[in-house]
Amino acid sequence: MAANIKTYQATKEHVLSVLKLSNKKAITVALVGAVDSGKAAFVSLLLELFQGTEADDLIRDYSDERFNQPHSQTTDVTLHNITTLDGAVIQILDAPDFGTKDDRPSAEKKTRNSMQADIHSIDALLVVADGHSVQLASDTLDAITEIFPRTLVDNIGVVFANSDEDDWKFDMNSLPSELRSAQHWLLHNPLATLQKYHGVKNERPDDKQAAGELEDEVKVHYGLGVGTLGRWAEWVDSRKSQSTDKLCQPFELEAKLETKLNEITPHIIHIKKEENSLEEIGAKLEAVNTQISKIEEEIKTGKDDFSKLVSELALKAKKKEITELNTERNPFIVAIEGVKGAIATIQNDIRRFINDFDKLSFARKFARDVNDAIQMLENKKAALGPEAETEIERKNIGEIIEVFKERLHILNRQ
Image (tube, rainbow, N blue to C red):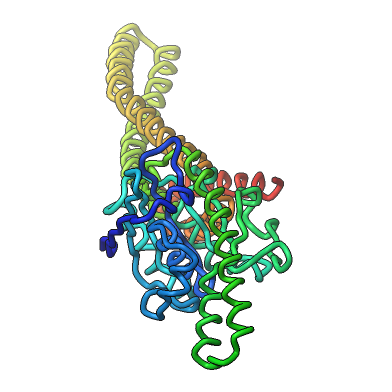
């Protein structure tokens, strides 16, 4: 399902000081975050600033309908298209909030679908987080590593909403190792203070002092926010754009592994059929060789020339039979070697796929999915019957399991 698309046109010069693109004429930013992370209010602030809204405009024109409330939840993808006065195009892909584990698959699917249908590239992925929390929720981290590959790591930044240096508690070391040095910004969203200001105006209209202090606070946070977003825009402008074609390539380990294993199965059946034929020829060769040994013994102990002649003719016939059986046997040997080569190629493909998957995935996803894949392989191995051909398949699966375990061992040492 494609995103809801909304279009805006900047109307004031001030927007150019908020977002000045030196290198690009267009940028696309994907925003992700959990429920109550401050993402909805952050999107509202971005849209206001990009359209040139001043602090006085915010204060004068505030309404609940105009601004998303801090605790509102995004359930669908929305693509905001903004054109600045100098012609720059800014796309903001606002992803659904990552809520509970039950909600996450739906949010992931909607985000992936929109990335494929609505945009061609991404300049930055911005994670909006609550700076008052020590770490991101596990579900949010899982969602980020499920949707986005590790190749995007240099384009990932974190904005901590409603935080400043005095009350920021987040521990960057709680992030996956690849994201601990990610660029981040602290932003005290003036919309949160604006809501308090209008609350005082409505509930305590005579309290001029409190209203005045909050109005000043809105303007201060607005000014600081402009500076923060200016630095953020400069960072986005310097990022190398990433094609969504590559970002959206599916990299589900179990599905691809299952496909590769299914490719091996017909070869195993083929090789067993060839081996059975080879065994039949081998049994015939053994029987003929036994007969040859018996004839040669008869020649040695023959009592007269006629008996020896008969034995020599029989020996010649049996040796011809050996030659014919070997001629019949050779294609089966060649076929078996060819099938073994095909299986080895698939095994190498699996190893290469594991390496590619490791490079593509965040360590968090790789470890989790490899453990799932090992369990799937163990179950598949246990379900095999006692037939001779399944023993070959069991051996192949065992070798693949060992490859996975070795990669996990390497990962755990890092």
